[in-house]
Image (tube, rainbow, N blue to C red):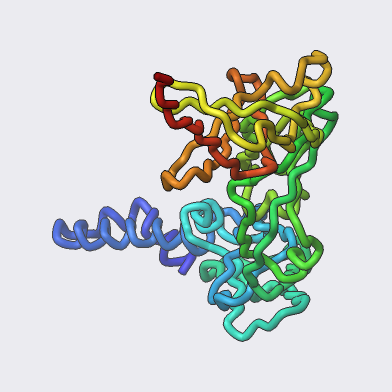
Length: 327
């Protein structure tokens, strides 16, 4: 072939040609030049390229639970144009997991696992293998537990905390989720609180859980009430008015057992003056139901636990007959 090419470039050779032969010879010359470039004229180059690891056919009930290299480094050798064009091709390291089961898989990166163009040779692949940890995918429900820091104001108690949501469902690898039983909030600062309040608080999550659900915030409803003590207040008079006229009942006083805020007791108030006690004759039979209400609005409610007695009797006024006049 080299002899044919050299004869084409000979000056005497071109003088012997007829006009018709010139066209054919020019075509032959062009083909010879192209063939020379592709066969013997193109440089052979070596290059390192990054090839993505493509996971296919992963069963729906399995999950890859470990961090693995998403790209591998492949060293190739071949004609410059083919090697440079590999960046435009969708070349990847396919990993078919159609038959995978839970456990650890070690997949060797041999030179034949990369599908390269004809004429290009794979020299080396790093790393030598892809390690996958396959785990069963499960769904687990976790209760959200509040964590508090500090104490409420004196004479107050934290009666309860309601979380919204009070539980969270997480889908993820069985091995990872089995490490945890509950989810906890970051510290809820309650120092000095004197009233119920609502707080947005983030969860204090392990990085494993964060990878599955991300940073998560919940709502904490704190019920804070005044601390109370039980007191029995005796000899509270009953006020009865009927048709605008004060009435008498028996017994004329009652005892009331109440739950009083400690803060109120610190004021050393007259306990018997805290309530107004009345009675009503609902059935119009002289048996009157006793009712007690606080005399005024207090900052913290007073709870009436018991009234003794609950029923009193109306004392009817006796009208004496008129005496006849003496003659």
